[in-house]
Image (cartoon, rainbow, N blue to C red; front, top):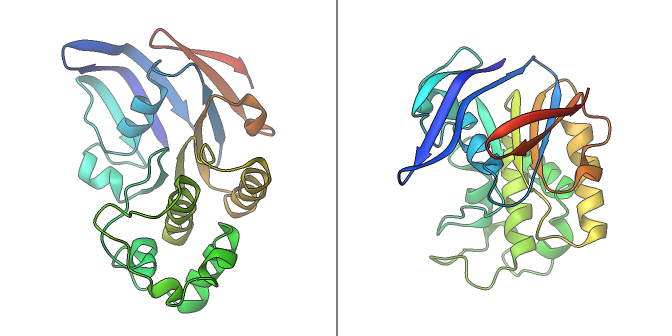
Length: 213
């Protein structure tokens, strides 16, 4: 499902990692932990098709070009990208989903209670920079978007970093239920969020070290 061989990546003339290998079989859940700035989020962006490796081979579900890879995955980034559209449009991203489906993912992402306080609910328009939203609200919209896409591969970059403990635990449980049978790569600095994962790696100095399988 996901195969990296001898992958190197440079950013602004700085080597983030070099000759990195990673293989994730279909339906497996893999966690990557490490300190801030170690390259784990960059690695996730490569696998998401947001970056292109400097050298080496990267194949995600049979695709090697970033534009094609991005169609195969759902991504929740630590800093969500929201567009100056309605909340509904930020979740559906131009795809046609039933209203019931959108409401379901909103419940899973703990958005429903907040949406019920808004006069326009899901039709509430977000400004150019989503001003007025808390980090947690933006993150939950991003999680609902990823759940709506229903891709076979889910990539998570600190998906609950802006949430309180109660919301974080609830959403992690929802993600666990909704990703059964899917391929998951979860980047976090909290190993306790990776219970039940098939493999866990620690990234240190651009190197992946397996700590559990």
